[in-house]
Length: 245
Image (cartoon, rainbow, N blue to C red; front, side, top):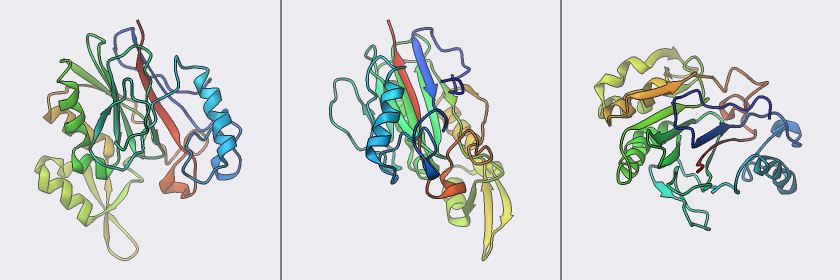
């Protein structure tokens, strides 16, 4: 599809990755048009048509996860079940790791040798619970020299959170304080959070220093991206990564 995003990072040539946008599908209403989420209220047959269009650009059907905003990475190789988790990992050729997002941060991962790939679904809950740390640790059982690409997510001018969320981050890492800017909410003091900065800090803390991103904001670009924070009822985009020979 013309406006799908190809991560701009120095991954090995056998690592393939894409991030879909909201354009090019057959969904209507709040799901217009390329909704890939089958759990958000869109008609199942319409979602299936969108997914069929997606599959034409992939070597195999994606290994979808039942995402729970947690910290569990799943090796999806040779796995035919839909498993609960928030990161998909693979070391097998043409096994497509996939996550769905609509403001949460998709984190693409691979090693410099091109032997392992993964993608993590990182909202604030996942970041606090350790999705980055757990995913990188799991990958390191099979590889080293990991790099990351941060895909589109809600930008720092729109990601409002409460004091309890900010406190959860700072309690774990005082150095994360610069990622929060005061923002007055309706009833109480709120903060604007930079999810890209928070993810970068956690990646660096576990030794992943090659980090790339265009820091694209899903909330502010309604023509290109679904955004749950902006619209409430909306579709989902997919981040996908796989190995080729």
